[in-house]
Amino acid sequence: MFERFTKQARQVVKSAVDIAARQGSGKVGPEHLLVALSGVPDGPVREVLSELGATPATLAAAASGEQDDAALLARLGIDLEEVRRSVERNFGEGTWARRSIRKGHIPFTPEAKKALELSLRHALALKSKSLEVEHVLLGVLDAGPTVRKTLNVISVEPGQVKRRLLAVLKAAG
Image (cartoon, rainbow, N blue to C red; front, side, top):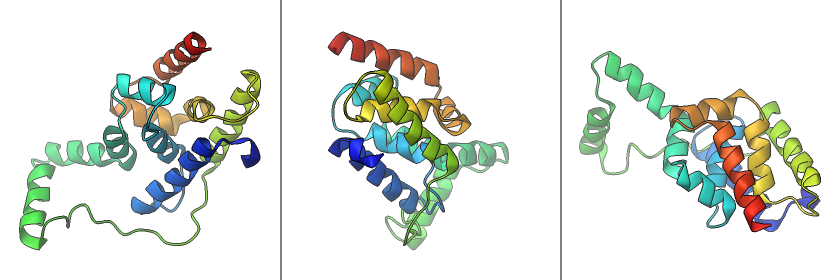
Protein backbone atom coordinates (compact mmCIF):
# COMPACT_ATOMS: atom_id res chain seq x y z
CA MET A 1 0.00 0.00 0.00
CA PHE A 2 2.80 2.47 0.87
CA GLU A 3 4.16 2.33 -2.68
CA ARG A 4 1.21 4.53 -3.74
CA PHE A 5 2.00 7.18 -1.10
CA THR A 6 3.65 10.35 -2.33
CA LYS A 7 6.83 11.47 -0.61
CA GLN A 8 4.84 14.05 1.38
CA ALA A 9 2.22 11.46 2.46
CA ARG A 10 5.00 9.10 3.61
CA GLN A 11 6.53 11.98 5.55
CA VAL A 12 3.20 12.54 7.33
CA VAL A 13 3.19 8.90 8.46
CA LYS A 14 6.80 9.18 9.67
CA SER A 15 5.99 12.42 11.48
CA ALA A 16 3.02 10.74 13.18
CA VAL A 17 5.36 8.06 14.53
CA ASP A 18 7.71 10.78 15.83
CA ILE A 19 4.81 12.65 17.46
CA ALA A 20 3.60 9.50 19.19
CA ALA A 21 7.14 8.82 20.43
CA ARG A 22 7.55 12.37 21.77
CA GLN A 23 4.24 12.07 23.59
CA GLY A 24 5.45 8.81 25.14
CA SER A 25 2.57 6.95 23.52
CA GLY A 26 2.73 3.20 23.15
CA LYS A 27 0.94 3.29 19.80
CA VAL A 28 0.49 5.56 16.80
CA GLY A 29 -3.14 6.60 16.62
CA PRO A 30 -5.14 8.56 14.07
CA GLU A 31 -4.80 11.61 16.31
CA HIS A 32 -1.03 11.49 15.71
CA LEU A 33 -1.68 11.35 11.96
CA LEU A 34 -3.95 14.38 12.32
CA VAL A 35 -1.28 16.36 14.20
CA ALA A 36 1.27 15.40 11.53
CA LEU A 37 -1.12 16.48 8.77
CA SER A 38 -1.50 19.89 10.39
CA GLY A 39 2.26 20.33 10.02
CA VAL A 40 2.23 19.94 6.23
CA PRO A 41 3.93 23.14 5.04
CA ASP A 42 1.50 24.12 2.26
CA GLY A 43 -1.38 22.99 0.12
CA PRO A 44 -5.07 22.28 0.64
CA VAL A 45 -4.65 20.31 3.87
CA ARG A 46 -2.70 23.10 5.52
CA GLU A 47 -5.11 25.72 4.17
CA VAL A 48 -8.24 23.97 5.46
CA LEU A 49 -6.89 22.96 8.86
CA SER A 50 -5.38 26.41 9.52
CA GLU A 51 -8.57 28.14 8.40
CA LEU A 52 -10.52 26.13 11.01
CA GLY A 53 -7.99 26.78 13.79
CA ALA A 54 -6.59 23.25 13.71
CA THR A 55 -2.91 24.18 13.98
CA PRO A 56 -0.07 21.86 15.00
CA ALA A 57 -0.06 23.39 18.50
CA THR A 58 -3.81 23.21 19.11
CA LEU A 59 -4.09 19.68 17.74
CA ALA A 60 -1.05 18.43 19.67
CA ALA A 61 -2.54 19.74 22.91
CA ALA A 62 -5.94 18.25 22.08
CA ALA A 63 -4.45 14.88 21.06
CA SER A 64 -2.32 14.63 24.19
CA GLY A 65 -5.31 15.29 26.44
CA GLU A 66 -3.54 18.28 27.97
CA GLN A 67 -6.61 20.49 27.63
CA ASP A 68 -8.77 17.86 29.37
CA ASP A 69 -6.23 17.70 32.20
CA ALA A 70 -6.24 21.48 32.59
CA ALA A 71 -10.05 21.55 32.78
CA LEU A 72 -10.16 18.78 35.37
CA LEU A 73 -7.50 20.44 37.50
CA ALA A 74 -9.27 23.81 37.23
CA ARG A 75 -12.39 22.22 38.71
CA LEU A 76 -10.24 21.26 41.69
CA GLY A 77 -8.92 24.79 41.99
CA ILE A 78 -5.52 24.00 40.47
CA ASP A 79 -4.17 26.26 37.75
CA LEU A 80 -2.14 24.08 35.36
CA GLU A 81 -0.30 27.11 33.98
CA GLU A 82 0.79 28.08 37.50
CA VAL A 83 2.01 24.52 38.11
CA ARG A 84 3.93 24.68 34.83
CA ARG A 85 5.56 28.01 35.80
CA SER A 86 6.47 26.60 39.21
CA VAL A 87 8.08 23.50 37.69
CA GLU A 88 10.10 25.66 35.29
CA ARG A 89 11.12 28.02 38.11
CA ASN A 90 12.19 25.23 40.45
CA PHE A 91 13.68 22.69 38.06
CA GLY A 92 14.91 24.79 35.15
CA GLU A 93 13.76 26.19 31.85
CA GLY A 94 12.34 23.58 29.51
CA THR A 95 11.74 20.95 32.21
CA TRP A 96 7.98 20.91 31.67
CA ALA A 97 8.32 20.36 27.93
CA ARG A 98 10.67 17.39 28.28
CA ARG A 99 8.93 14.08 27.88
CA SER A 100 10.06 10.53 28.00
CA ILE A 101 10.60 9.70 24.37
CA ARG A 102 9.63 6.15 23.56
CA LYS A 103 12.32 4.24 21.71
CA GLY A 104 11.99 1.34 19.30
CA HIS A 105 9.11 0.28 17.10
CA ILE A 106 5.76 1.90 17.83
CA PRO A 107 2.83 -0.03 16.38
CA PHE A 108 -0.23 1.56 14.80
CA THR A 109 -3.62 1.24 16.48
CA PRO A 110 -6.38 -0.54 14.55
CA GLU A 111 -8.05 2.86 14.08
CA ALA A 112 -4.86 4.35 12.56
CA LYS A 113 -4.51 1.35 10.24
CA LYS A 114 -8.13 1.82 9.22
CA ALA A 115 -7.42 5.52 8.51
CA LEU A 116 -4.58 4.59 6.17
CA GLU A 117 -6.73 1.96 4.42
CA LEU A 118 -9.52 4.52 4.01
CA SER A 119 -6.94 6.94 2.59
CA LEU A 120 -6.27 4.49 -0.20
CA ARG A 121 -10.00 4.11 -0.83
CA HIS A 122 -10.37 7.90 -1.06
CA ALA A 123 -7.49 8.10 -3.52
CA LEU A 124 -9.09 5.41 -5.69
CA ALA A 125 -12.55 7.03 -5.45
CA LEU A 126 -11.07 10.37 -6.52
CA LYS A 127 -9.31 8.58 -9.41
CA SER A 128 -5.86 9.57 -8.21
CA LYS A 129 -2.85 7.53 -9.27
CA SER A 130 -1.02 8.31 -6.05
CA LEU A 131 -2.02 8.67 -2.44
CA GLU A 132 -1.65 12.33 -1.41
CA VAL A 133 -1.82 14.01 2.01
CA GLU A 134 -5.37 15.10 1.16
CA HIS A 135 -6.38 11.44 0.95
CA VAL A 136 -4.71 10.74 4.29
CA LEU A 137 -6.74 13.53 5.88
CA LEU A 138 -9.96 12.17 4.40
CA GLY A 139 -9.12 8.70 5.71
CA VAL A 140 -8.26 10.05 9.17
CA LEU A 141 -11.55 11.96 9.32
CA ASP A 142 -13.51 8.77 8.52
CA ALA A 143 -11.54 6.36 10.72
CA GLY A 144 -13.45 6.58 13.98
CA PRO A 145 -14.13 8.38 17.23
CA THR A 146 -10.60 9.34 18.27
CA VAL A 147 -10.16 12.08 15.67
CA ARG A 148 -13.72 13.28 16.19
CA LYS A 149 -12.96 13.65 19.92
CA THR A 150 -9.63 15.41 19.21
CA LEU A 151 -11.25 17.90 16.85
CA ASN A 152 -14.19 18.48 19.18
CA VAL A 153 -11.75 19.65 21.87
CA ILE A 154 -10.92 22.60 19.61
CA SER A 155 -14.56 23.04 18.51
CA VAL A 156 -14.11 21.69 15.01
CA GLU A 157 -16.41 19.10 13.45
CA PRO A 158 -14.83 16.41 11.22
CA GLY A 159 -17.63 16.86 8.67
CA GLN A 160 -16.80 20.54 8.45
CA VAL A 161 -13.15 19.73 7.67
CA LYS A 162 -14.13 17.13 5.08
CA ARG A 163 -16.63 19.39 3.29
CA ARG A 164 -14.16 22.26 3.19
CA LEU A 165 -11.30 20.07 1.93
CA LEU A 166 -13.44 18.53 -0.81
CA ALA A 167 -14.58 22.02 -1.88
CA VAL A 168 -10.97 23.24 -2.06
CA LEU A 169 -9.93 20.14 -4.04
CA LYS A 170 -12.89 20.57 -6.43
CA ALA A 171 -12.04 24.24 -7.00
CA ALA A 172 -8.39 23.38 -7.68
CA GLY A 173 -9.14 20.43 -9.95
